[in-house]
Picture (cartoon, rainbow, N blue to C red):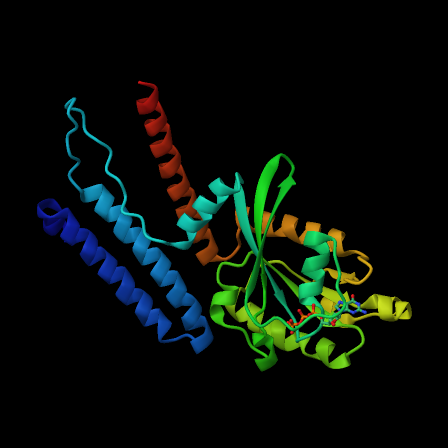
Length: 292
Ligand SMILES: Nc1nc2c(ncn2[C@@H]2O[C@H](COP(=O)(O)OP(=O)(O)OP(=O)(O)O)[C@@H](O)[C@H]2O)c(=O)[nH]1
C-alpha cells in the first residue's frame, strides 16, 4: 500500500476509497432496508466529496503567466452542501437548516406553514399534491438563517414517506388533528418511521385545530410526554401558538445542526465546514487578484 502511495497517489486514494466502500457495504448487509436507503444517500454524498478531495490533492497545479502556481479548482458536483452553499449566498444567510412536517392527510400541515410564513389562512384548499418547499430567512442572535420547510406531497396517504424527505432534515414537526382521534393514534407510526431515518433530530408534537373546540386544551395527550417531546396546542385558523412553535423549532434545528449527536450528521457537518472554508479561501483569493 505504501509503495503504491509513493509511486502513484491517485491509485492509492482510489484503493483507499474502495476499501472504505467495501467495509461500508459489509455493514450495509446487516441493516434493515429503510436504513440502507438512508445510507445510500450518505454514500453518494460522501464518495463525491472524497473523489473531489483526492482529485484536488493529487492534481498537478498549472503555472500562471507570472510563474506562480495557480490554486487547483475543485470540480464541483451538485451535492447537497454545494446547493446549500449557493443558497446561503443567494439569501445572504450564514446557516441553512431543513425542517420537515409529518402527520396524516388534512391535519393542517400546509395551513400551519401558510399561517407562519404569510400570516394567512384560507379555509378551503386542495390537498397538497406536489412537494412544497418553502424558503424562509430569519435572524437568530446575530446570525441570518435560511430555513427550508418541507411539506408532504400527499404521500402521507400511504402512511409512509420517501426516504429523500427525511434526508438531512434537522428538525421535525409532527401534527395531529384534535378533531380526529385516528390522526393522534397514527403519530406512533410517523414517529417510528422518523426515527428509522433520523434517530437524533429534535421533534415536537403539535395538536392543531384547537379553535374548533377550546375545551380540548384541558385534556392531556400522553404521546409527547412518553417520548420526551415538546407539545403545543395550536390553531392555523386563528394563529394560536403558531409563531412560538415554529420559532422554537428553528432554534432547535440550528442547535442540532451545530452540535449533531448522530455520527453521520457529524461527518456531514465536517464536510460542509470544509467546503465552506475552501470556497471562502477561493473567493478571498479572487478578491485579492481583482484588487491587484
Ligand atoms: N378549524 C380549523 N381547520 C383547519 C385548521 N388548519 C387546517 N384546517 C383545515 O383542514 C383542512 C386540511 O388542511 P391542510 O393544511 O390542507 O392539511 P394537510 O395536512 O396539509 O393535508 P395534505 O395537503 O393532504 O397533506 C383544510 O380544509 C383546512 O381549512 C385549523 O387550525 N382550524
